[in-house]
Image 1: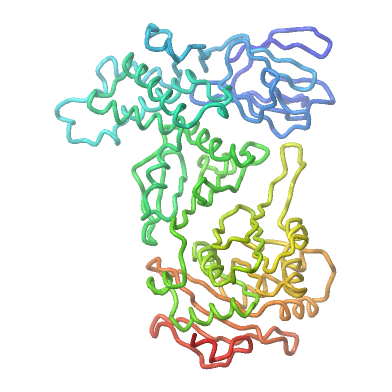
Image 2: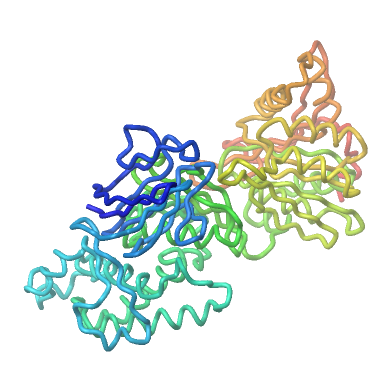
Length: 550
């Protein structure tokens, strides 16, 4: 239960008690009805997370303000907080049994406070009582059980995480004036006092518990050791306590987990904050990147039915070249020489393949073959490309804000790129109508441009391109679209991932023109499991045999 004090646009006040979750809006079916044209039908929600109360905006036009600041998903709320929705004010007047009020406690005073004054979560009250009464405590017979698998460790980790966030009040502080090291040290010292005051975990595990909670509260939690592990190529969080990783092309469960759903959400918010992106009910899915360039994707519940999920695609810290692909057996020496000459001869190249086949990696590698005197402009939804080039401009799209304003898509970026005097344009991934603009750029003086596309075969890639060009809404006949594609593209590189996880160049085909209203392709190189890499023996129209031997 939550006690509110409602103040109308006319200044009249009345008390209100609601059960959580509570829906706020002008619709009569809402739990809190605010009859005003400035209030959306379903304006916002009051939610309970881990024993605390949060406010969540539903993408309303006038929005939600917490103590004079516009918020989208904020909390925990405390006594006296004022929410402004339209012309209405909602003051937090009291908490029932579902949530306990946050206690304003100075970090410096935590160690001297009595136990009853510690910020505590209602959700963890019963586990703490059990631990204090001896239930679930560690005995000599349990010494061989890993502490990380213990429910008691998990309970204490969650309790301390919530208490630390309450003490530091990270949601309300201006973190731009505090360095990461200062914040980490402050959190570490605060945790030390919290653990000294009360902790059910054995003393020999308290140091590890302190480091784990600190990393989760002000760092990236379980993600930090996984990001530091060079053998991990992909991290998948299906639920806060279900983490999988990809190593050597194989998926496997990982023992490191988050303490709670709220801890996972807090880490996502820290990742997105510097990028100017958000994850809330009005924008339930988001793409981004980490500081090291790794690709980041998150989906919020209830869109993700089992809970918030995160996927991180890591990229090699060392920039790769063609020789690295040769060493791993991803292509043959003859294929490498051909691709090098194709880039230097300014062929327009399309890299096609399924998810996780190495399209971005190959694009980075091909960029090493571009002459240093050329200017490159890259366009991406989430910046992933790391080109080894001095004269390089990277542009990144931007989604709309909560009011539906400020969106910048790839197609708009492509038009801007044409005004930057580029020699080559690289589109990170074609997904829609921007394909027509990319092909037009290839046909109008920007030879040597490159792009990627999701497709299983080169023929499928052409079909997808046709569909995306038609999405531009230009009402062009299909034959005209095919002629446009045939004139723009020169080479299609098809990538694939074998059952054992190995990624390789599966096929290199050349676009030779159009005949009988069908785009003609000829295979120059291919891979067959029983024979390996092989050349077809056909002559390329864009790269001569003499050049291929370089």
